[in-house]
View 1 (cartoon, rainbow, N blue to C red):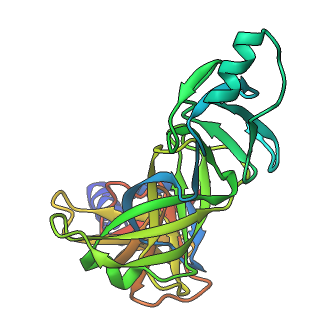
View 2 (tube, rainbow, N blue to C red):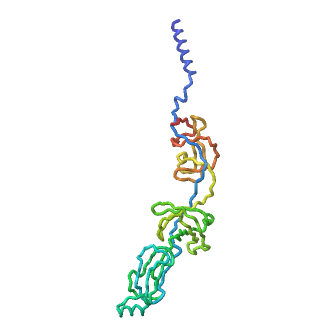
View 3 (cartoon, one colour):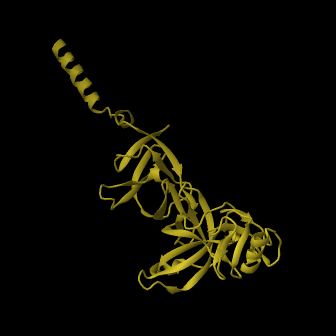
Amino acid sequence: MNKLIILLAIFTFLFSCKNIEPDNNKLTPKAKVKVTKIKEGYLPSYLKLTGKTVYLNKNNLVSPINGYITKVNVRQGDKVKKGKVLFEIQTTEAYIMNNKTNKSNNYGTIKIDAPVDGQLTDLKIVNGNVFTNSGNILCTILELNDLKLQINIPFEYNKFIKEGEKCIAILPDNTKIQATIVNILPQVDEVSQTEQVLAKLDTKQFIPENLILNVLIDKGSPARNQILPKSCLQTDALMSKYWVMKLINDSTAIRTFVKIGNQTHNKVEILKPIFKKDDLFISEGAYGLNNTVLIERY
């Protein structure tokens, strides 16, 4: 009888153990993640080109007569104002007469003024008592307010270029300057098949001529799209498929395949599917997760 009671007790215990269901939340580890919401915005798509700085207005000062330069009132690189006397030149006869008599007078002297405000470059004569022929260039004055950025653009990108549009010029020291396209020349270089575009740099900073710059021209059309941090985006080894981990409740996230658009170093456009504004996505901790995963925010 005692043996029967013991056997019944053992059987009852085993049967009750069979009906105990495991607590999946305790047995399945949860991924600790950070989450974020989707935002609306615009990511530009840049056409990357190069350009160089040019001063369109260069005023060459020439000698009006054959004679001797008796005074040079400027040095290479000087900034000058319109009307400033730069050179004085004497006729050959007057210069010889002065030397013979050892007298200095202004007979036969012509003063050469700066025709515009600007900066003096390419000074040909640095000292006085130098003979020059009529028509010889004495110096060049750059009009500093007429600096332009010259961009040679392959013709296939012509549709992205419009007068009045903005672009970004990047100096060699990575300084970014906004520029405005002001002129598209109506001709194409026969060899390179590029057209020349001029842009005005929106800066008062002095920039020398012939400086090579990088130029970014936005080839997209501004539109409000879905934007996520790039840390949300996952991809396969071939980068042929992209997905994000979207939360379906407070503790579960599922893999959702997406079509992406423009990207920056930290943001990406999501073109499809269209999500709700309140949807949540894993922004940290999504790497290597399965299609469906239990999560815990931190």
